[in-house]
Amino acid sequence: MFPLPVSSPPPLCPFPHSGLVLNQDFKMPHGSRSLQDARDAFKACKNPQHYNQWAETYNTQDHDMMDYMAPAHTAQTLMKHVRHSPDQSLVLDVACGSGLVAKMLSSLGFRHFVGVDGSAAMLEEARKTALYQNVLLALLGTQALPVDQFDVVTIVGALYPGFVPVKVVRELCHAAKPGGLVVLTRGNYQRPDHFSYTQDLHSELRSMEQEGLWKCLELRQVEHYLSDPHQPQGVIQGSVYIYQKFVTLQY
Image (cartoon, rainbow, N blue to C red; front, top):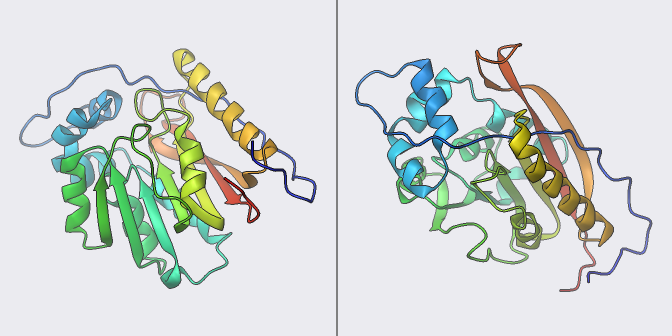
């Protein structure tokens, strides 16, 4: 058990319901791509092999077509709570993909990044950005992250069933320095068979607050996480959670 902080913990964040189904295999076609191609790719990405196939068009075509706003929302929310100079902060970009989050944060003054991903092809794309001091090939939930090393830890677009187990959020907290920030960004996909994952995630986040691991600074609801013409409003909404690790932790 982790000790509770001396002061009373802040109120727990209220959580929305969300879910996502990722259950279709795909092969990436050559040549020009349609919006449906991009949408199918997003729905199919269940494991590193899918991402290895997807890496070539992940940045340049599919995210542009789907108007993927998660990195921007992550950066905007983080900047409201950063207390250290960005250029002195070490960022762990978990499930970094091709480096979209690092690109956004670098435009705001962050200069020091370590990327972790389960796809070698995605990490090669991340290397090409020249933003990362190091990139690590690792499957989240099976290989431990470094402990107490990072001023900022981000995970964007990966907290879904078939991607990352819920227990990984504890590793994200452990990876942050005492007082460090952890940002979790995900889409609020309304899929019934993913509600259980979301409920488990929210239960774990609450438990970690109650145990004195961290405190919730903000839960931000965003109107546009990703475009989807099949949704009533043409978009999928999203959530950005930001936590601060308590300073007085004992492992």
